[in-house]
Amino acid sequence: MFKNSFSIGSIGGIVIRIDYSWFIIFVLFFFLLATSVFPANHPDWPGYLTYATALLTTILFFASVLAHELAHSFMAKASGGEVKDITLFLFGGAAQLTEEPNKPGKEFWMALVGPLTSVGIGLAFLLLLRPAFRDLEPLAALALWLGRVNIVLAVFNLIPGFPLDGGRVLRAAVWKFTGDFVRSTRIASNVGKAVAYGFIFLGIMQVLGGNLGGVWIAFIGWFLNNAAAVSYRQVAIEDALKGQRVGSLVETDCPAISGEISLDEFVHDHLLQSARRCFPVIDGGEMRGLMTIHALKQHPKEEWGSIRVGEAMIPREKLFTASPDDDLAEVFKRLSRENVNQLVILDGDRFAGMLSRERLFSFLRTRSELGI
Ligand SMILES: [Zn+2]
Image (cartoon, rainbow, N blue to C red):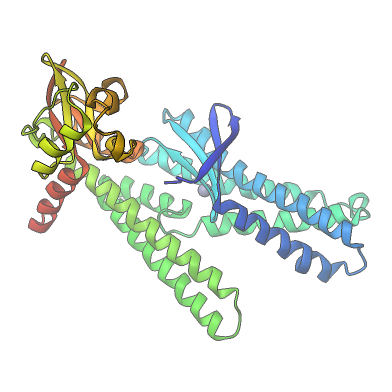
């Protein structure tokens, strides 16, 4: 989901990542605080004080967002799930779970613990506003803003549209009531889409009324709408694939090539002679690797005559493989998670064929056209 991100460390075994888009929101919050929020209430502050307070407040705000996501993640881990990482990005934070929770009760608490944490942090900041502390103006201003904003964050996240936390609570409730995970996801994500359109509408009305801040609200609506659609599709696809075996979709008609031929021979005798884009490299009955267009393009054309396929291919140990007996839903999850387009199917040690993402999608398309 976040391709342009880097890791900044880990907390309790959970990797924390920053997406480049996060810098935009960081700078935006910093300037909002430094040029508008604090100067409005404290015009007497010297410039350096305003900026220093704004910087510290911004950092603590994102620490609060991180704490909210960590709460979700630790709850997920405590109930047996796995959390890949937490990424801070343009619209806040996102914890990536490797799996959806398997019981409504688990999902309910996993979702609720985030807003509860934000409320807790918000109240803690507001409690700092005691008389002794009030005299330290910058700290009091910081605590007041962080206190309010964390509570706003909690309330916003409790809006009952999937994939917001409130939408997850809604899904857990419908799921408990109907016992149908896919159906409850559909309902919660439809409510999510309605909420998203509400945001877009509100944003546009604000812009028409002369408030440019509405662009941001509409933008959040657009993001929520996408997220609702994508989350439902993911669940629906996994449901359609559940119980199906990889073997039923494997492409077995894969012409093998030898690792001993040159890239030139590969291009003219194989690649340009077929519609295929990847070729298993098999020598002496043994699967050695996979030759793809991408691997070919790592070498300049002039060198194709002198490089052998065996040197340019993706070696077997670097390939993503599956067995014909693997569950398609699991394989689909892996394809999305690792962001690969094809899997090599090995039956024990024997090459059994290929399975591409395209093929998986055309299988799903047929089913959805027939409405099954
Ligand atoms: Zn949350």
